[in-house]
Image 1 (tube, rainbow, N blue to C red):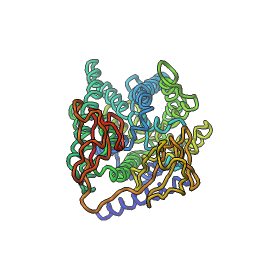
Image 2: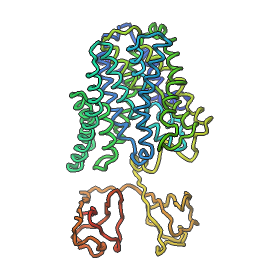
Image 3: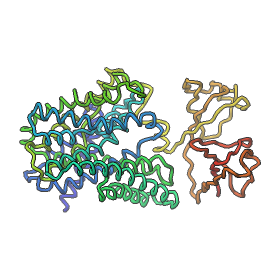
Image 4: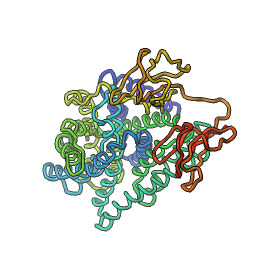
Length: 533
């Protein structure tokens, strides 16, 4: 027991330091973890415990999927959600089909096994890509980072569904009706349960405030597990449900949400390390050597033919689609790394014991190894050669990301024609201590100000200030819906009756948020947000 604890601690410490080294040498950190597992592999036949390892990796993938949604900004994702969604569904299916055809016609595999190989390896890994982009601090043009993030974070459920169907076919349990039902139940139950669990969780977390960050983290961990287990129990896609719950919860405000970002960032990193380390432990060098040639051929076809054709089929101009330049399509295609999900699905195939003519697990091992080592290392150079690097953007931080993860917040205000700040420089105005003008948006121009910068009418000012903290019992935000037939419909704020120890701080009008002033007009259907002590 003591030796096991020392060994585990040594592995974790080694992984942390290897992660720091990877940014300097330009090699993705996940490659180190995979090789580390391979080095620590003993002579025991790990296939005997593949089922246990597969279950543990499934749990790890649940948290990766959940945080993939939780950490996605819907505001950034909205412009690309349609195209990313098609890449995650149609793109994955095309990739799996083309890879299956290659395995059958070029490698002479059986039909079912060919498409099983395509299904297992068809999804891309968001964690690997963003680990590289953040380590190298690369920002990408044309909202490409958001497109990749949403696609990679949401395409695992389709790959899992296709893998489950093909495993049933090989096992001889598949009928046309069963296949149709499996696809329907996977998508329908996964989406429905995901939305229901997400809305119930947000309601619960808003209704009952949990001040202890530790208990809140445990509660959300339980929600993430339930988001997979409940739909999976009735034949639904648990990974799809976990992603939906994550993205809904991550884009709704509730007490204690910000500390969860740090917590799940650490948990997800640990889960990625665990999956790649387990892949290394399960790998057998002799099997890898035997399967290396077909693995290289499948990798080359996947990277140079199947993935580019799938991306082009979705992102090329057609119908109402916006045009994606060829260089952007090329980069989106190239960054389709294979990673954690493919590993988990391959372990599932190994643990299932279904008869296959080829060692699919070892082939996936080799493909992931090549993908992370070769593709991952070349992403910065490829992005640069395609002129897709935006030097003014930083994938590590945006205003919204930083306010979620640090002790500062950003806010905005407008300069009107009657404002006292109009035509005055920053140094002429006595700013409150702790308030900084970080940026001025003037038309389409972004101005980084100094003391001599003069405010103009129409300017939007981006302020930076420290996050508010209060040691005593905090003030409470209370919502007062204004009915459509209210007598206050059409009246102005200063006419609305004031309540003792409360202040109207915000008006929610549909998707619009209004900071009220005395002359702001109230409308039926508004939600008045009151700050009450």
